[in-house]
Image 1 (tube, rainbow, N blue to C red):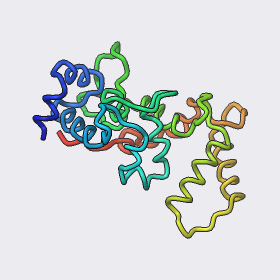
Image 2: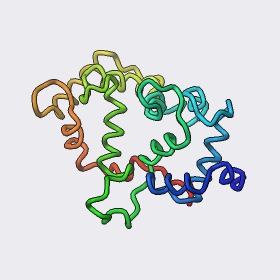
Image 3: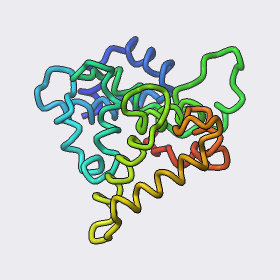
Image 4: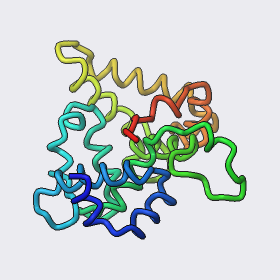
Length: 200
């Protein structure tokens, strides 16, 4: 199975993906095998419906938004390289990566890139701020998918959204900018919470 995956993926492609994402050779070939198993159309790309068949995404309250993160704006298919770039945000930061060359570009799995990825899950209209309505949509999704049987009124959710924005909003524009988002999460271990252990 692994040899089939690596034979379809050229060695130079693997090396480029390694540099870009930080994944190891074996992780890339294993993820390529998973990618091809999801590719029901066998055309080398995945569509939203391919992701919707993943049980963990189906039950995640942000599943639809996570799925959307795999697709560049206006696109409805993602190739393996794009798939790997998005997954790289969830790669744990290794100890040897923390003291890398400061002139090198920020790795996809850095704290700042993980925060930007999370911020974009909330910023639906991509206007670089999280509005009350966007926050309310997330809260509704969480209540619907995670708190079945719990009766929280729309008014209560609105109050939670208002309070959240009030606490995070530093410039008085009734929304949360990326810098305000970073400030709110400065004590949260984002590196750990936004990591998936990929087998080596």
